[in-house]
Length: 268
Image (cartoon, rainbow, N blue to C red):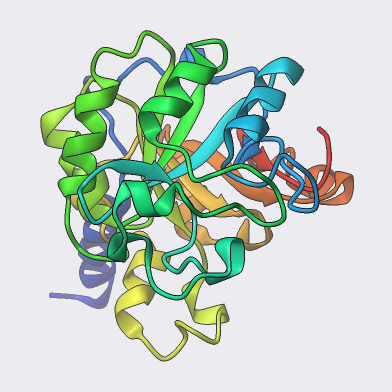
């Protein structure tokens, strides 16, 4: 096989692996036309800290879509909380999954009187008024969070999509809820000190795992917009979502390279 043929074969394999969903696409149009408030419209020094019911209510009032994070309590209740550990937001040692819902809801978020909400509580507050980007956290490789989250969401009347850094979560939705728009979260992992010595994450950064899940969109760190695989996914019809825009300057740099924007620390 000549060198040219080898290059062509490798290119075909590469395109196959990174390609987003091409056929039988879910309807993405209801997600467009809004910016998405990261963890709600929050201020951790106020009574509306991140991922709180108050922050969600403020985002709804302002007309923003909302992005939030879902993981499971010890007793398998889907709760909304970003970090694996409780230390930063609640001042408590341990992970979210080490505590029951009752124990988690006895804790306060930041310096507020808000507590960790359940997914069911958040859906009741938002009540379909704005579209949602729901991130499944899989610090533990267990798709049960998708299964239990879907049980609550299957009768929800509002517009929502799902995303995750873990391709197995996105893959779960590919085969069990193909009607739902699904997204792969990503970044240039080799630029980050935590991940640069872990080549397995480089596959994620190059989106070579997309063949497992065939995502409808790629949610990429906005400062890594030059990533070739991200650009090709957009050319192949995948939506491109920027996270997390933190200033008008960030937005100006990213606005022509992405289709949707997740933001905090500013107003878009």
